[in-house]
Image (cartoon, rainbow, N blue to C red):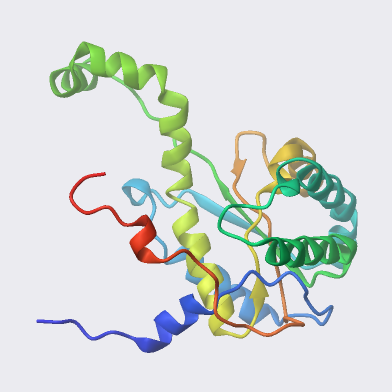
Length: 234
């Protein structure tokens, strides 16, 4: 049987542009809490639910973060932000840069920020567990895993955070709020964590500015499915 399809959900995804031009008007707390609730509905590895969300609405705190944001954005614009991606034309890229610069210059007026965080649980390795892994992976496979353990751990944490982030972004679009996902803060993560009192053993995964959009939602520009789909094998 063909399951029912919610046109509203697909329309929401198809029009969920990154909204960088935001009004300074405040967003009600109950709407912001609904966004975090949407994020909490997302899955996490082993259902550990070790994510945390820092919500910033105090204008003085946002103003304190504004210089850090400017430094991170300018570092991006001076490096990766200088090259037009293959999926964009030059005009679209210049519009995106202009929106990024606008958000940089008006960051202190941002009504709300959400910083998704994750504190990885401690895993107690024992001899029986090691034997079980060797039985399944072999010594060579276990060695490769150990060599790439940092990447495995990082992706494990990220896979427990970003599904919730996508839920939050979809919920924001459904509620008429503008938002965009950024990770530029990671260039100065230590300073951001110090400014927000985030413990050293907690990793941050994004800074998401949220507010009422000054522009209009519209269709996103994405590559055709035929260009990215591989059937059965690469």
